[in-house]
Amino acid sequence: MESPDPSADLWRSATRVLDQNWTGRYTVPSRTLYPHQWSWDTAFAAIGLAYVNPGRAWRDLRSLFEAQWPDGRVPHIVFDPDVPEDAYFPGPRFWRVPAYAGRPARGSTGLVQPPMHALAAWEVYRHAAAHGADAAQQARVELDWLYPRLVAQQEFLGDRRDAGGSGLASIVHPWESGLDNSPAWDDALAAVPADMSLLDTYHRRDLDVSDATHRPTDSDYARYLGLVENYRDGGYSDNDLALRHPFVVECPAFNTVLATAELALAQIAGVLGHPAAHRHRERAQGITAAITHRLWDPESNFFHARDVRSGRLSPEHVVSGLLPLALPDLDSRRVDTLVAAAKSARFGLPAPANDRTGPSFDPVRYWRGPIWINVNWLLRRGLLVHGRRDEADELRRALLRLVHRNGHYEYFHPGDGSGLGAPAFSWTAALSLDLLADSSAPAYARTFQRT
Image (tube, helix red, strand yellow):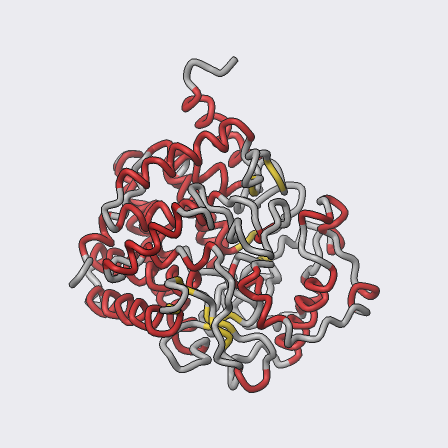
C-alpha cells in the first residue's frame, strides 16, 4: 500500500541519501562504488542540497574547486587520501598527477567532466533567500569566491580543448563526457588499440561490487586505460591533441552544458556587478552556433558526436543528441524536431541513454540503454526553456514515479523501471528534491532567448 503522501516520503528518503553520502567535506556519489568526489556529481548534489542544506552545497563546490589545476581544469575525480588505494581503480597512483604548488594534498585525475558547476552555483544562490538572511549573505560570498574559478574552468575548455578550431570543446576520453560507454564513442574508439594485457596488470574494482553485464566490457575498459596512459604520459598536455591523442571528440551534450554554464555565469556576473555578463551571453550564443554547424546532421535530423581526427559524425542516436534542446538560442525547427524525437519510439519519456530501436541498445549495460535521472533532468530544462510545459510536466511526473517506486538508484531499466547500478545514489536523490520542488524552470535562459 502506497503512502498517503508519496511526495513527503520521497523528500525524506532523498534527504537521507544525501546525509548518508556526506563525508564531512563533500558528498560521494555512492558509498559502494564511488568513494571519492566526482566533478559533475558534485554539481548535481549541490542543486538538491540547495533546498535542505545550502551550507553543505557550498562546501561541496568549494572542496572540488580547491583541487582545480593552475590551467583551469577541474578534475573529474578528487581522491580522498583517507580511502585506501585499492578501494577504487584507477586510483591516484595510476594517474600520477603532478603536485602543483599551492594545491592541497588530495590527489586527482587529469580528466574533466561536463562543467555543470556554474549552473549549480547559480541554483544554490537562487534558493538561498529561502533559508534566511545569513544564508543569503553566505551565498554572495561563495559566488564571489567561485566566479573567477568558474571562469577559469570555462576558459580552459573553450581554449585549450578547442582541438577542432570550431569553438567547441573536445573530450579526450569517454569518461569526460559523463556518458562513459555510450555508443556515441564506438566509431572513435574503434581506432584505439585495446591492450588486454592492461587488465592482467590492473584489477577492475568495479566488477567486485557490480554485475559485469551492467558495466563496460573488458575491451572497452582496456581502451579506457590505454587512453589515460597516453594522455598521462604526455603530461596531460592539450597541445596538438588531434595529432597525438587517439580519441578527440566533440560531444553535443558536453558543449550544451558548456553553453549553459556561460548563461549561468552571466547571471552570476550580474549579481556581483561584474562587467562580463554580456560577454558570457555572447559566448553561449557562439557555442550554440558551433554546435548547430558542427554536430547537426541534416540527413538524420539529429545532433551527433563528431570525431575530430576523422571528421566523421557518429551514426548513433543517443540521448546526448537530445540535450541541445536546453540551448535557448536553438532555432524553432530544430526544437520541434528534437521534441518529436524525444517522444518517438527511439526514445520516449523518460528518455533512455540510447535509441531503443537500434542494434547497440542494451537495457542494463550502463550508458547503452538504461534511464538516467540527470540527463532527463537536463532534457526537462530544455523543454521548459522552449515553453514545452506539458511535456516537461509529464517528464517530471514520470521521473518522480520511477524513483519513488524503485529507489534512489544510479540508473533504471528502461522497460520495467527496476533500479540498476549503485543504490542510494546522490544525484538521483538530489535531483528528486529539485523535481519535487518544481522550481527548476530556467527563467534566466528564457530571458536571453532569441537576443
